[in-house]
Length: 84
Image 1 (tube, rainbow, N blue to C red):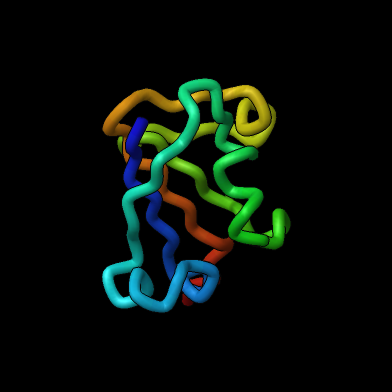
Image 2 (tube, helix red, strand yellow):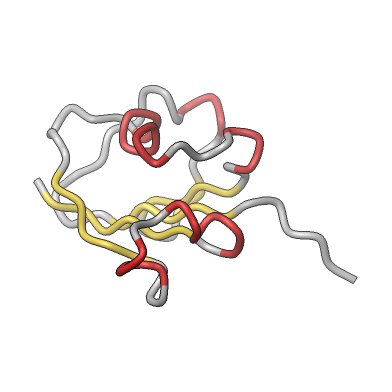
């Protein structure tokens, strides 16, 4: 199945070079793949995987190892962001 995978801010550097400018890419993933399994090949430091959304809905840290996605879902991840 296909999903859209988005990384923001400093995490964008973990995307392939051709996907970095738009900060997203289409991924083919197994129907049983969890968020943790989808993220693993991108070598994201887990301490920087702060805000995780599926279709704009927050996924708490304790659900990320078991939460599965559906065809067409958008998985978006932000690092912690400091503000003023």
